[in-house]
Image 1 (cartoon, one colour):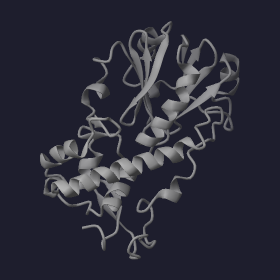
Image 2 (tube, helix red, strand yellow):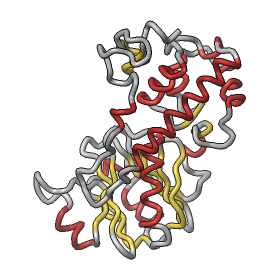
Image 3 (cartoon, helix red, strand yellow):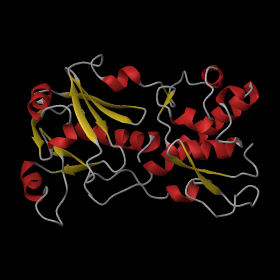
Length: 279
């Protein structure tokens, strides 16, 4: 699932492609990608509007329009695909079993931006204003925000009795951290995923804050080199496996103490950790 680093890399690569362009037409091939919004309502809000900027909050990508905005949530497998124009889009999109899967596409002044998710978990929504957009209202502080300091993290941890892993996954606390980077941050901070959030002292909280910032920025470096290639439908982020220390390393030796990394279910998700050195 794309988390903060992946979505941030997408935002940075997409911005120069679409900024300043006008949306000529909204093409909807699979209406499920817009649910619960009706295609006609989404088209009314975006067609004719100019894209002023591209930004991210948490794991959401936003296209800021001259009036309103477009929200994209990639969920597990969502991705963006770039076409040279409407002709190429209509020739290649969903043309055959080997064709390019596209759910929704924005035909711009120059080029077409497609949103695709074969499993249909990803979503695209249009909103008339920032205030009308639920994610912007409900998401907590972004993990890349300047105000996300060790002091701020300690204050939020102190108010919660939830296990650390579940606290980090709750997007209303800190936005952008998912299953991968929560496991990595807790491993780096040497903290037990089941430990209660409010049990950390200021020193341990500062250590966790440092670990969160480090793993997210290290992952962003990997996600940017090579940069996202929207023209290649098979493109995906490369090299992330090399920087992982806990996630999906069940049975492999911990790179700190040598004991085996273990996997357990926590809150309906897989948690990877080292029982020996995470306390």
